[in-house]
Length: 384
Image (cartoon, rainbow, N blue to C red; front, top):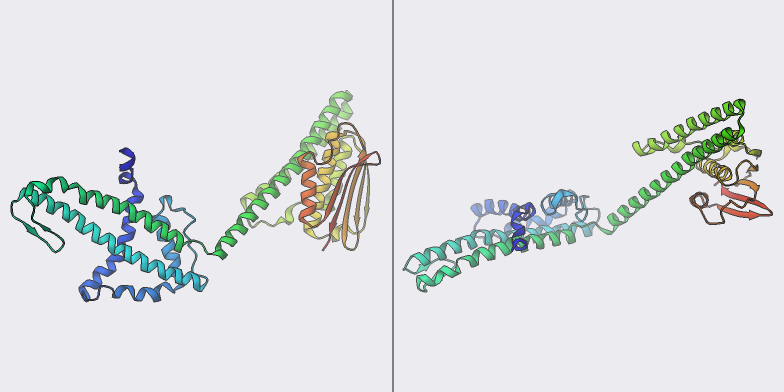
């Protein structure tokens, strides 16, 4: 029983009914002007529905009056962009007026019918109205009194559901709008993935360096070495905070340019950080790194950072060979270190996946795995 009466306490039931009544306000005014032509107000709706902005207005009304909360994306709030959208709007306006006429008739005459039944049950005289004639014995009308009220209740709920379903069908997003929404959602997911990679690379690198430096300082027992290690941890922590600020800036400001992210021209900072952690880094840079396009240079920096982080995390203080080569059409990155038992196999770890993903997004190639007794990360990125 409570479930049956639940629509009575829902505000949406009444806002949907009000939504059906709105067109009848104009019809009521017209009936005072020309009552012999009640269909006339439906004619100008054809021209009205062809106006692009009308679809936006109808969509806004549908969101706030037909759906709870006003956030139902099934109702488009964009103006008509195609003739198909315009004719869908015309059909919607006509259907809304027709259902509004039915709703207004039911709202007036069903309660009136209940009152007439009550009056007939209390009066011995027959009752004649334009809608019904009551001639049965008066006591027979008493059990019929709830029927018009139940019919009114069912009509209020049923017509509300019907107008909502039709609105979703006729005012719903077009194919172009659904495609645009899908593209926007895809861009958001890609941006979130990029931000996750940024955090993983920058913060992961800083924590790895800090852990390695702290462990080495504790094991060394040398005050001078400890001072150098603490200095390296401090420098790495500051760099990580700068990277974190960049990432948070992207989250706070959607229009913030990506150019604020580090590029390969700052690769010396990574190499010095790895050296201060105990790794013996042999670096060779060939070609004009400063001419590498911004997107390629930024992703190359992150790939180099993740590669050095993996060396420190899994191999420790080992010799590392870094090669950066800028050719006419390709940026080559290679990081090699002696293979140890602690290095994970190919395809494991989010770091290796991140390197492959960054290379693939730029149309490049990445190879990771054992090679002639070394662990190798070899990446080729197109410059165009």
